[in-house]
Image (cartoon, rainbow, N blue to C red; front, top):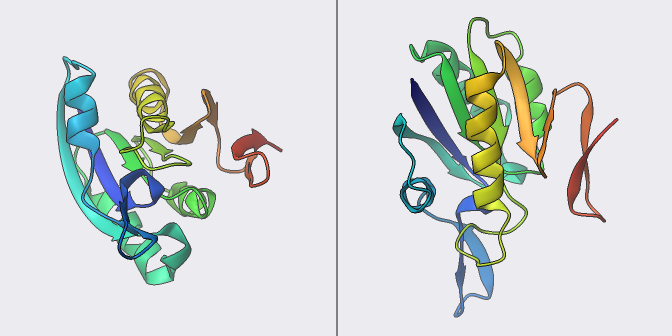
Length: 160
């Protein structure tokens, strides 16, 4: 069973530059995370965007939509920034005959205390076990795009 991972950027791939005192979206850490996880399934990692989700616009979401829809593989995990993840998931809901799971993290995957590894692991399990549809895997839970929100003060996603 092959899983195709798409990267759209977000905090999960951010890098901290001491001399700039700011975070910037860097290259995907997904291959490193999967290697460290000693995975045994076949996968492919593809890049769509490298943007903070607050910088995503309708054209970017259209690109994500077209790319995911055109993907021949049925099982898709999309790493995405958490601020507009729900909006992108809602856009993808009209795609049929695929299991699409979005995930991300509240802190960069390069940080030891990041939730990235756990969220990716949850997304991998979800994409292999759920029926066709669009889901969000965050904080150890699986959500549907129409029943979720990001609770910024608590740094979690929750059902609404």
